[in-house]
Length: 176
Image (cartoon, rainbow, N blue to C red; front, side, top):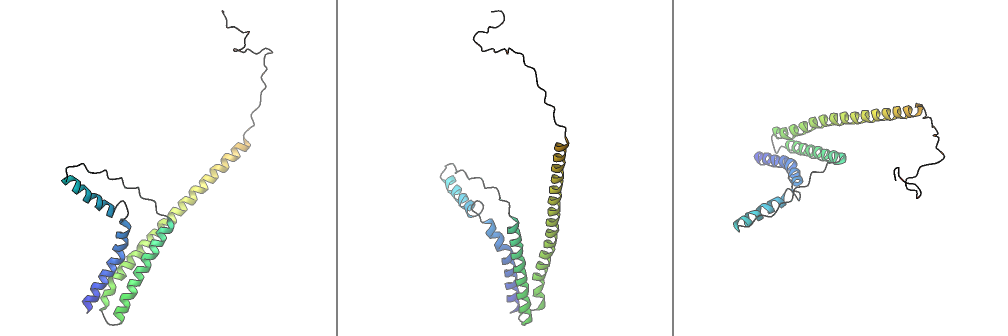
């Protein structure tokens, strides 16, 4: 009985970790489509025809901050639920105490990674705030310099009474 529960716990842990990774990888350009193209290439090569062009995979989109936070919450919730489930199984006497070790280690590692991620997010936020402050200071200095710069003196040029117009009808070039 206890070995069955242990196997179920291992399957649950792997399901929590691997199924989301597998689903994320199975996009239009990387998952099943690639396998279908590979199968069609094999059939085309047997027919001595040239294989079709495989379209270039689209570049990965940058994930938004909200998506990253949601993913972290889901993973934390899943690992916590797994730990509570194994603790309930142990408390009911269906399994030995040590089956709570893998979920505990996974949750602890995840929380340690979250701590590092929070530190990196904080550092990134501080760096962005510092860059904005520097840009504001430079803009303020540029405005002050523009305000305090001396106004240019406008000089009126004297124009001769008769202006030469090369396109005038009665004018000719020198030497004509």
